[in-house]
Length: 182
Image (cartoon, rainbow, N blue to C red):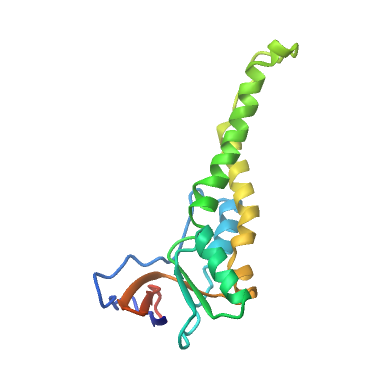
């Protein structure tokens, strides 16, 4: 599989309309935690590598399977490319597993507090959930974990990471549109 870089905003993929440019990526609210997440999972200063020859594996999408597959290929001496349009880590890190487990943990604590009297523990009236604090904790945990799925780690493992939209242009070719003017 080979990769072609398309860098100008006016360039369109050869097999369809121009995709929405993935730059810059923001995650609301853009607080300290989400800035750390974006720094790891879609660094604004990242420059896509110059596609060089053929790859043993080209992965479109940096979710769990894409991350593991590309790291394993590079670890075995293969040439691996990983293409992601939004945030490295995919659904699990950014919207699914990590965020949901964090929020579920807070909900379980509140549920236990409501039943504490059954265990002989009396919680004062007025205990409340601070949903903003629950969400800030989730964003902090997600930012901490994002280091494991980060650009830095992937590059250290030998994976060539391309940020942008991928389009197949032939049976064994992929084009990456990064939406940046160079």
